[in-house]
Length: 101
Image (cartoon, rainbow, N blue to C red; front, side, top):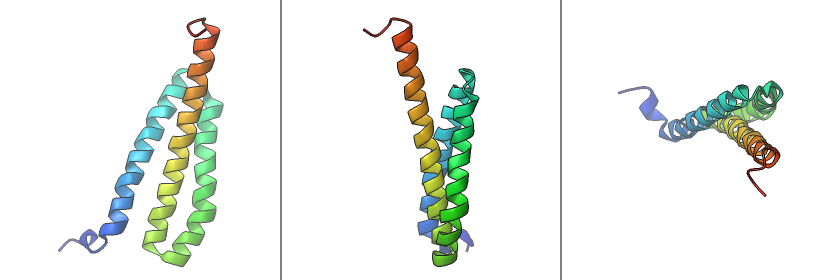
């Protein structure tokens, strides 16, 4: 039996986490293409702070499931910030080029 099979709940959380990090990577590449490195920096900094603060508490309090939850929260924050920054860029670009009225 595989060691990971003993923990199906945390594995499901990690699957969602990898999806969030994938989206965060896509948003980060998009922002780098527009030379918005400050946005990429904030996309990295805030999830790191969440992982270090809330992640430490959740891991100490709940163990493996807490660590997986903290990682998911950091991934959601990264993907969410990336989506917000991308929408702002698209709105600014569309408005300044005269495409949107």
